[in-house]
Amino acid sequence: HYPVMLLVMLLVSISNMGSAAVWTMMVPYGQEMLRQDAAAIGLLSTFSSLGTVAGIGIVAAGPITETLTADALQDSDNT
Image 1: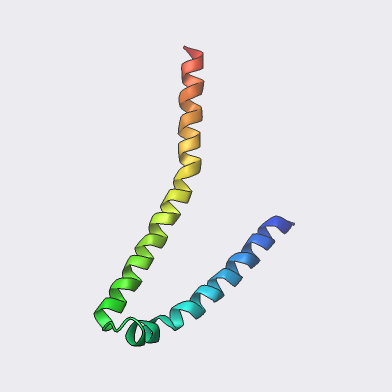
Image 2: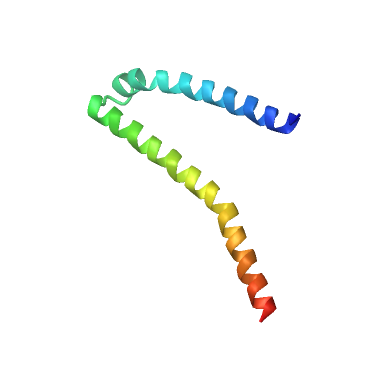
């Protein structure tokens, strides 16, 4: 019923699989190439997750900001 939504779900699924493959190799890369210990790799993972949450917050704030701005403009037109 919703072909666009199915396409978006497919693309997100593929992206998530690719992301999982990259993070699987992060520990050996951090140990061998960056010469870091487990704590530094954990810190890298933590900041990556925080960046993801911040990005989601920014994307989610867009429609909220647009709605609030539109409401404020509509209120100022009525006065």
